[in-house]
Structure formats: C-alpha cells, structure tokens
Length: 286
Image (cartoon, rainbow, N blue to C red; front, side, top):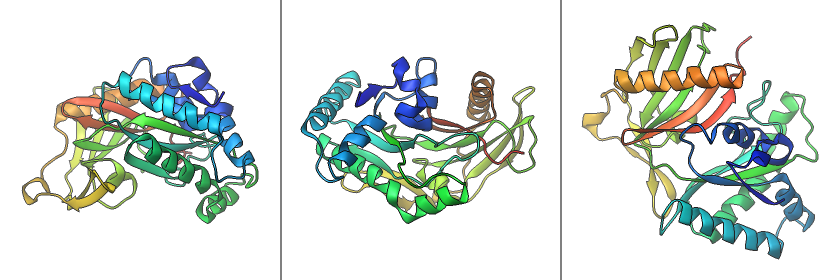
C-alpha cells in the first residue's frame, strides 16, 4: 500500500509509516491533529526501485488523487501543506532524529508536493543523516522512510513542550518554549523563545522567561516560508497567557499518560485553537 491516511489503523504500523507518523496516527482521532496522508515505505521502495529519479506512474496518480481528496476534506480551494519525513527508526526512545531529515512548509499544488516528497526521500543519503545514524549505532544502508503530507496550520504562535523538564530532569514540571509565527524558528534555534515552566500537580505557571523575539518564520506564497523581523511592539510581549500555557501543559500531561513515556510535542495556535503537530519521546532523560 503506497498511501494511507492518518486516521486509518494501518497508519500506526511503524514499519510502514515511520515513528513520527505512527505516533501522530495513534492520536489523530482524539486530538486536534491536522488532516494528512502518508506515502509509506512501500512508496519509497517503488521510487528507489525505479532508480530514484522518475516516479512510477501509478504512484503519481495516487498522490494526485490523495492531494485532491485532502483539499476536499479541508474545504480548501488552494490547499497548503507541510511535507515531513518519517523514518522507520525516527522518534523512538533512543534517537529522535529531530532536524535531521527534510521538512517543507506551506507547499501548494500537487507538483510542488511531488518535488518536496522527492527531496525528503533523497535526504536519506545526506551526509548529515548518515553521520547521525553512525553516532547512534544505526545502519546506514537500506534506510526505510515514509513521508507525511499534512494540512498546513498558519500558526500565530508555535513551539514545543516537554512533559518533563529536560534541563533539570524534574518529572513534575512541564517546560514550554514558544515564539511568534511558525514553529520552525523555535525548532531550528533561530530565535530565543519564551520559556514557561508549569507544575504538573496543579497546572500553575511556576516560571516565565519572556525573551526578546527579534525574528519569526511566516508563510510566504512563493518561497514557502520566510524569516522576517518581528514588529517592535511584539518583540518583548509574552506569546502565551496563563490560560494558553496551562492548555499546552495539560495536553503534554495527557499525552504522556496515554503514550506511556515523557513526551516532546510540537504544537501551534491558530487564533485561539491549539493544534498538535508532533509527539515523540524525550530522549535526553536518564
């Protein structure tokens, strides 16, 4: 099977869709996860088996049909999507692969999606990925990778949250890092985000450190995304009030209980609506 949807039970099979997508699929029915479909490891195998250049015609047809179907689901005349790699051994307990494989944001049109997926597949052979795999004692040959195509969330605020404190190893604290715009600024380290520490026991904000956020990543119609200056009046304003910080912390706590391990999540606010974009184990705890 070349393409599966997030809500399908088959999309929870790690060997078929990779760790990132399998985790999201487990949560898609119960949480606000944007609509998406996954090109499976079988699709990657079909592409690689054809020489890694031209797509097999059947696979192209499936991709066009799935993209059109998702546009209907999302009631979008011009559907913008995020295209993310999901390796079989990604987002596991020992190696997260955060930032190693390619991600493309705000992609519109089936042809642009095809190009982004191709680039994700090709990233399996990048020297950065190969070196990461060597450092984590993982095989560098016959890497199996899937690719998630997911409705793009035009985030006003985005960031990451940890259901345990990754700095002091305190399991009773949730740590949240957020900034303006898309989450790329936070996960790539191009901005110093706001930091909130929330108590798990009563969901009260224990600490807040409001950074001067000079840059933010925003959607751009031609480039996909662009890093721009944050308006001066917003730079030192907090991205989250206590209600939003509590909502994110509560989500992290519930996901930790459901998944069975401390979680590292990516999330975003579009207006007042919180979306879950990714959920992986925290790999830095002892």
